[in-house]
Image (cartoon, rainbow, N blue to C red; front, top):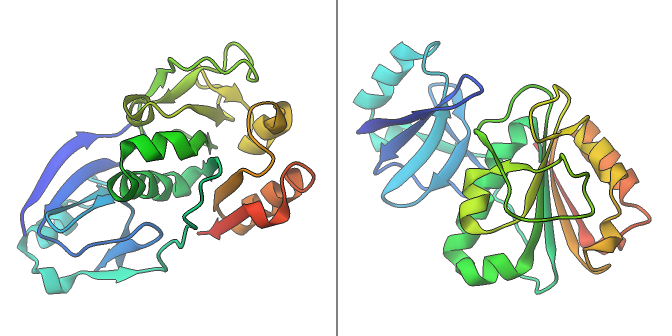
Length: 227
């Protein structure tokens, strides 16, 4: 199978392209010989995955020699309702890759114009480092502190507003957890009450998000995806 290196990411992982691999839907991941790879984007022609290039050189050689049937898809695909209300996406740490996969998928399914109109805000948080290089956002969001201006290049290119939280005081990011960032802002001030919030993360993180948003949005407008 053709495997192509694309770029090295800041968190020690590298982005690779697999050609003519299996299609992986958002919420699922690619498995090969008991290894599980986060998927950033997937189609009939190519699948973009994250690999620890240094630690897995032998694994990369095995992948290049593998057949399509050697790969399996695991996990349950997201079932995001087709709503016209505003959407807010929230993800922390290892779930960030899942959220990127979902955004890429929705762009293909809905079209960029509809995605921009529905996706009002994306919030990312990390306890270490983001799997992308942060860039200053061109979106002015007065509800956030003036120094909280970092976003990702992909979201900036898609013209989707985003903000980042980091416990390591990364430049342009809110200093603290994603939960602390949500506490620091008033979601009602710039997002409709009937907005649908979709959160991705481990069970502890999702429990915190549920408590934080309990009195801010309707219960039926909160979707939690544990991973």
